[in-house]
Amino acid sequence: MKEVIFTKASIVTGLGRSLEENWQKLMSAESAIKQINYFTTERLDYHNASYVEHLRSDSKVNQVCELTKQVLDQVGDVPKDTQIIWTGIKGNAQFIESNQKMGKPYLPLHYRTWIADKLGIDGNGIEVNAACASSTVGIAIAAQKINSGECHSVLVCAADLASRFVHNGFSALKALSPTTVRPFDKSRDGLALGDGAVAILLTDKETAQKNEYPLLGRLTGWGVANDANHITGPARDGCGLILSIENALKMANMEAKEIEAFCAHGTGTVYNDGMELLIHPCPYLISGIGYRQLAEGMVINHNNNECQNYR
Amino acid sequence: MSKLQIINILGGSWVTASGFGRLSEKQKFKLDSGLPQIPKAKEIFSEPLTRYGRFDQYTKLGCAAIALALKDSGLDESKEKRPIGVIVSTVYECFESDLAFYETTKEEDGFFSSPNLFSYTLPGIVIGESAIYFKLNGPTFTVGDTLNQKGRNALITGLNLLNSDVCDTVVAGWLDGPNEMLNKFESGDDQKRGAIFFVLSSHEQ
Image (cartoon, rainbow over all chains, first blue to last red; front, side, top):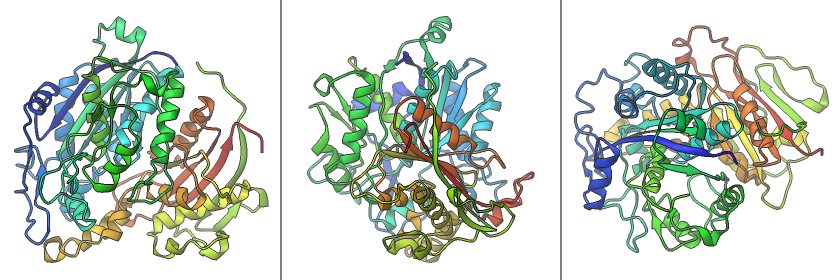
């Protein structure tokens, strides 16, 4: 596989406005989960989320664009011919919550073209949706585009909100934690939702060298699989996870014993964490930092990049 | 550049306002404006898919077209899971289902929010339902499309997966259900709705 390099990365969450701030606060065991104050949760069993302060001060501003703008500002310039992969999931939640009175309903393709305008680039690319694996799959598709020679650089970008729409939905599914989200803990009792935006620039080696981009990590293999089990529950035997790991290792020409860290979804739910604990191929297990829907995979990838031995 | 392979079309299907059909049966394809004529479960599934009647229109439309495409390819029955991918292009996703779910959150400050309707507020649920029924565990996700392209991005993505040997068979195509509310926002939309799928493979059947 052709060398695919992570060159630039940024995130914004309720915990911090940059990659560095998020990392520092994670290392000092800070949490951004707090009581929701922008809609009432009195009749629900769940009241907490991680949200970005002041994001909702002007209800007429598209909050997904506002979050995306913050990560794009951190990424800075990208090559003119960079393709964009937008992996946001529920960019229409704010429009729906406004009773369809807020401007127009942003579809995924609108966010991609909005990013292109913002960066002043052509904006070819695609939108990818694979639920909470959207950004991870987006990164895989970006790697495939670079590897095949279709393009030299791809910006994978996503933003989503801990909106009333998704909070009420996950609340109805009884999937939220009524206490504190505790991934892989014996007493875990559910997930926590969060605002989040992420952007990652992947390039080939020549583009990284030409632009003197830093080497944050290399992507040497990927795998995507469906466990064909249930639309809201994982296969207990982890068959989909096993297949995707096997395919990623095969592409990277690696063996399982070489894996030194494993970044899991780590939702904090009983069954998903149980399945991941059953399968994870090495003792060093990393979970996501709260449940950011689309942004989750990329947040995990950011954490991965901090591992010195990341492949 | 990765080496390009010969890709075979094993089968195909459509569900439109004019009816539904399969590629191998040489029925006349027609794409008109209007509500897609979604087939009944007994017309497409050999084994009962009990949830089919409860699907939202987007999921029902997509599942029907994917089922017809797999039947057309002779790949509709299997006892074991198979690494077949499914890539769906959609512009409007499941917007109508989003609205239907949100309506249930309005009473009693969300106390009556419907978990069943919330499950259908992801555009990939149609793939999940198809994957469960047909035992497909290859790469599966939706991609966007620009207006009126009707599956171009899914076909390109599917071909790329085959050419890079990620899997050897992919169901790829277009799915957009009726979206009356959204139509007024998109000038240039040809208003034609439905689903068209092909089964592509790097192996001959």
